Length: 95
Image (cartoon, rainbow, N blue to C red; front, side):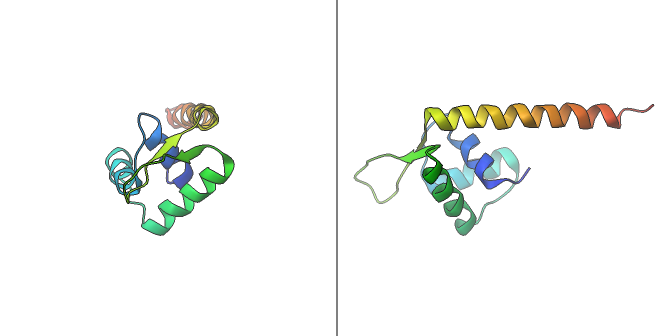
């Protein structure tokens, strides 16, 4: 799975993170390294949808937090992935 939006939402599900921390976390749990353009493009899209928001801090690094709407969206997407996974695994079983 390499949907940057889903990866960012998943990264933020347990705690707020700034961009570099998200990149590291995503690589750790997915094995994929998002480039800065891909990561910040996803962050921009997710902010526009209201699924994440930037926290106010006095630091050059800006942490982002999953919103309640973003948490619901992540749950929906993960449920859909679960159905796909179950179907795929079932179809791979020998006849």
